[in-house]
Image 1: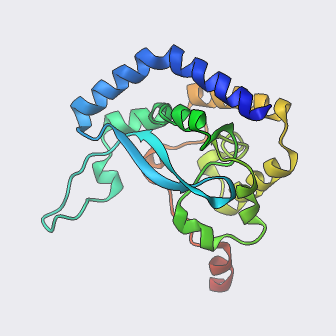
Image 2 (image 1 turned 45 degrees about the horizontal axis):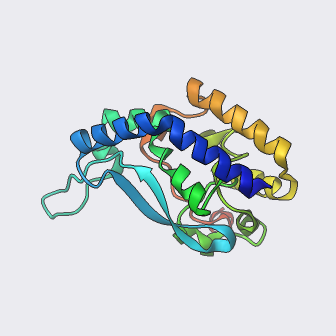
Image 3 (image 1 turned 135 degrees about the horizontal axis):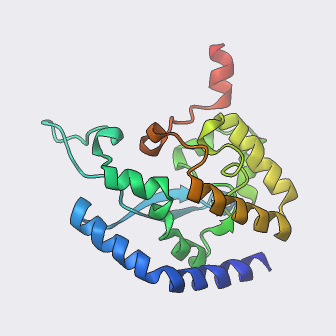
Length: 202
């Protein structure tokens, strides 16, 4: 049932937002260049890798050695706007149609993090990852990685249709009000280095 709803809603949203998606694509091409779509390998259900799609939000500016500049230097005001209003994530509706994502589930993070999770944190991969999730509507970037993972695992243990509908409605409200995100957080988010590493360092 969840998969059927994901496909139906994502198809409808792609149809409704197709003019917006086309316009953003043209603006990204004009302001940031090619490729318009940024794709990155992320862990999906049971940690199986897939390519996550997003609209590009940063330039390819490099230093004199040919190395990419830090994210905050490559992120333009236009890119910040896309991130602030989650418009960069519209291409992920295609991921939903393909079966890589669900509309609601723990956000897919970096492949590098798989080896850093505790046994409990790794349970976040027991369900299909989502465009939005329980952690995103309960603090988003204002809470620690450990708190996010606790919320993700709580969702894994309690997810149902009514909860998904609640999360979607809360997400819509947060997108319009840009809650739980500071301007600096549109630019970069600190990397997860592992819960055990933090405990040892203390």
